[in-house]
Length: 303
Image 1: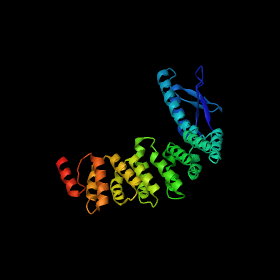
Image 2 (image 1 turned 60 degrees about the horizontal axis):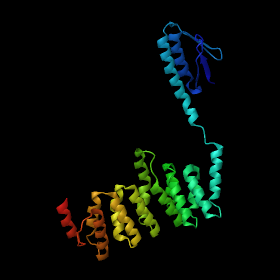
Image 3 (image 1 turned 60 degrees about the vertical axis):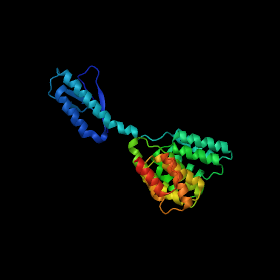
Image 4 (image 1 turned 45 degrees about the vertical axis):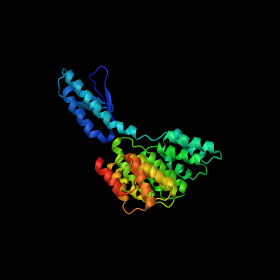
């Protein structure tokens, strides 16, 4: 039960409330206040009386302000617990239904609208819809999920390890496009998604390796340096190699040059050409030979 109180010695009684779970503390504060201002009365007739001087107006009003701030801080959490409005929930459900429309344009529009709405309850349905036969719909869904914030990263992380290639590809792409709400949350987000991308570099399907390399280039995490260099040396697909080199270049890490140079040791002719090409892109150097010794000599002159 909330207890409303009013200061009966004022022309316009000031009223406030004590939350049920803070009754003792609130009543104690009110009782201490009466020591300054005199008498106050609760709405249910209970009286507090103090022995203070009524002429101490300045001190009394100061304590009143402090008391009001404290009570409001106690009441505020109750407002934060209010759930989403039924109208918003109905709108989300209607958009989810449209993801199954026979019209691909309507499915694209629904995906875009869900991304703008940001209702995380739609993530599961959006992940399932990534199996759509239309590439435009899959792209729209991945982009939309990437805009919905990091709070739903867990279901997307799980989706990268199950289902069709389309679902895994879209979930991984959306993870790469996620941005933390604040800089302090970047490490936590990367701790969850970088291992997923590194695992994707070893996938049997080149589409997954391709999007994993792109994602690592976007997040620019230093843990990816050695795995990317190793993947570059072993990769047979030219499209994937191109994205791996791009990711290494995006990292702008001195270790990239050192790791690439070291990987020239024991590499065959084809591998050396790939690695040396990556070194030229990353460093901007014009070393003609694709050997470790040639690049080591260049490095010693420039370091």
